[in-house]
Amino acid sequence: MAVIAAEHAHGEGAESYARDRASMARRDGDMPISEIWDQAANTLHSLHAINRDVALRHAHPAGNRHPE
Image (cartoon, rainbow, N blue to C red):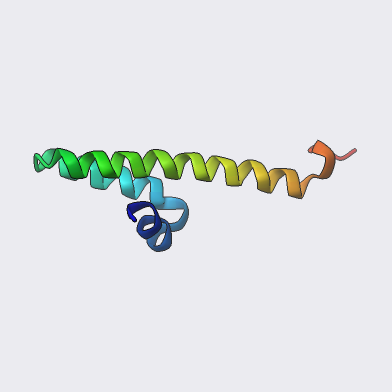
C-alpha cells in the first residue's frame, strides 16, 4: 500500500518521498514503519528503472538509440 500511495501522490519523486519517510520513522524510533518505507523505496526504484528501460526501447525500436 505504501508503494501505491507514494507513486500516486509523488510520481517520479515517490522513491525520495519513501526514503524520507523511512528516515523520519527511524528518527522517531519506529523501526517497523521504517522497514516498510525502505522496502517501498527499493520497490519504487526497481519499478522506475524498469519503466525507464521499457520507455527507451519503445522510443528507439530495435535498440537503435543513435539514429544516423
